[in-house]
Length: 84
Image (cartoon, rainbow, N blue to C red):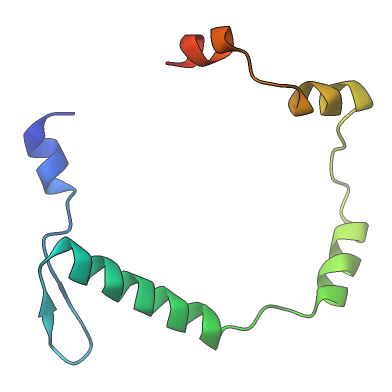
């Protein structure tokens, strides 16, 4: 990605509901954190029994015991280097 593309995706400033403008990275990050904290606090999670009954009714794929063991094993240096 070029520098121009990266800059076009950057949040340079935000304005809150009261019209205050925030321009520094720390200010912007704090406002985003405040917004999402309030957003999720205002929308309480569903009752866990509702979630459990829904998940029991859905036909979700299951890992085989072999796949589960494969996912739990240590990641090798070769795998890390291949991913990079």
